[in-house]
Length: 267
Ligand code: F6R
Image (tube, rainbow, N blue to C red; front, side, top):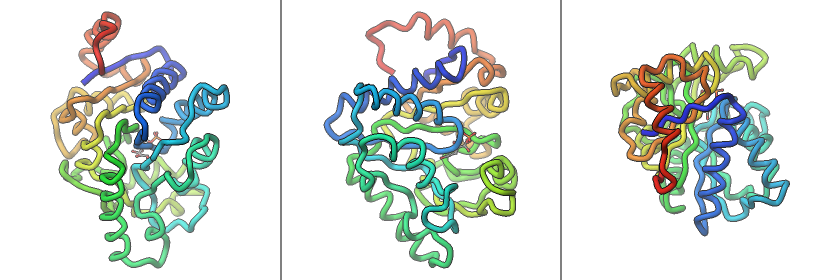
């Protein structure tokens, strides 16, 4: 695992945007795994800026979101489909048909559990058919969740329905009129699904992420902190600001390693 500690959120956004632009420029049909929430917002803004400056095209990109709420009507502004359109996909030249959302079409209110289960299986097949994810962007929840894999999620899990913890519902209530409006159920890529991506890039900024980052990077591998599963991945990069690095025991080692990283060393 590589841990990159940068001065602030802007530096984190620029660094991760570089990694995404590299992947997009180096493959004929790049496949991106996209996260939602506030952590990747700076990255998306930077990618949109570079696209508008003519520096990158997303024309041939296929994108797969990590997760989606169940029960929000199509077009609901807090659905993750609407989120990704508003902050990234709708602002660049990616083909809307190539932006995939888990449970899409089946996760709306009133649809059967069987239809959602079928959509989860189809989502896994769609990722495989695209050739797998080249770069998977990730955030981390206060309780250590990865995607919406809450504590005690199987480390081998695949795309499926999960129930949000009350802490996650409280954390996400800031996007809704109140906690009562935050759905309890979601469809999320499983931890096994996420670990299949060729490169994981986990972003975190701010003091509130210091404890979960320390558990994910340096704590024991445990389903009580699903993000600790990145320790199993051969190519995982954790990109954080100083505030989110505050609880890391080996922070100086990570800084020295990064400062002395040879040009020939790939992630
Ligand atoms: C979102 C997702 C979640 C978020 C996490 C952090 O697609 O998968 O795991 O990354 O809840 O959310 P923010 O970035 O809003 O703190």
